[in-house]
Length: 307
Length: 212
Image (cartoon, rainbow over all chains, first blue to last red; front, top):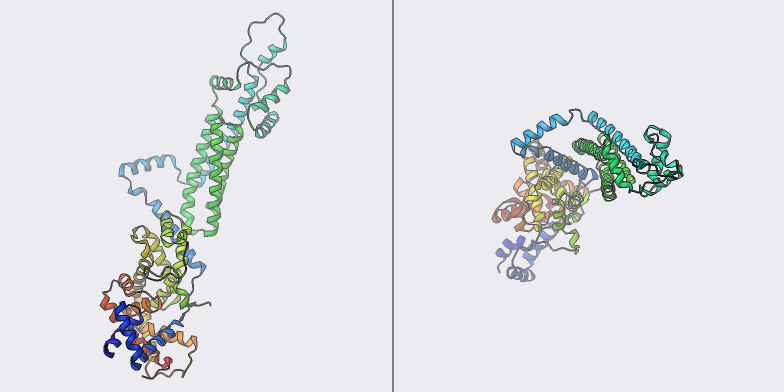
């Protein structure tokens, strides 16, 4: 290999871009030619000098925060612009439905929904509690008096004052309900203790509960629970929309903490909901579920207000 | 301020053809991180950012010559990468793909009036200060002075040459990768690289301690 050819290929040789055969030939020439070897050494020195070059630039935490904020903003924009991709009729229907049901001022509506949801929660819990009481207190019309029957039995048929109208007993019942692992036994015991001279009906409590609910004009506890849940879900939906709009402006660390909290609450909601369904609207599970919904609303509301 | 040493820039996969010095578990492979990021996992994209942000910001800084501008363009590069992650076909060539985005971002920026005017002033300064007759230290070169010399020499290079030179010398990309990143033909890459080296050599010759 001649010097001219080696000089022409020297940079490619230095860069490791020659194939094996060419590289071997250049290598052999450099070992034998002092002039070309000096060129190669100069190239190496030049490279070493350039490798000492340091830039007045660094990767700061703010660099990632800026990227993360812009990505979050793009996600929000994408979510907001997802609707126009739907067919026109669906968009029109969605807009119309939204115009009727979604308030223009979401904080006010959210507050109203929360109030309704809380009221429904309280109502549902009271109703559940009262029905629990009825389960025990309700007795079908007594049969014709039998000779020798105890007069106390007749007193049982007389309706007791409704617990819901009496704050103090109500509170006592709620305490019992919250503490009781199951809604049937402890409260029945309490009632039994309160009126030791009453005899419990022979029929099952659940059937009587249903009968009482069916004959009553009032909504059932289950209906109230479902309504409260629906209101919470609506409030959560509205607040989530507000939060998503604000995500890009929020501190990423704060946002991460809130997201973790929300995930934990979602798990609680799912678990308590499952428990409520499998245990026939167990008041304890229902109460925990609605409390979890309320907590989620609180967290979202806080996030929507965060700076 | 802490500075980025060139040696520290060559983390990550360094491109498909680069030898990997540290075996990485599959869970942290770029392919795995990309798959997670595509599913909306922000942590995965943050890890990608941590792996590639240094070489990317260094590359962009070499192209635009301004720290604040380089930071801004680095953010833009990663935002674009995130936006188009779904369009990436060969995950193993993520680094090449990312650098092609960085190249586009830097070149778009350089075409703005502000960048052009800034470059002209740098060129003027560099040309005046880095003439062949400029006096230089006789032997060892202070790092600070070297940095200033190299920065000015880079700024004085024509844009295509600076792009190819930076990718080859500082980012240690193969010719094949440079072709993929720049879209230039292989002969152009070789020619531009040779001319850039010649020009850089002329400018830093006083510091090489070599008499030509």
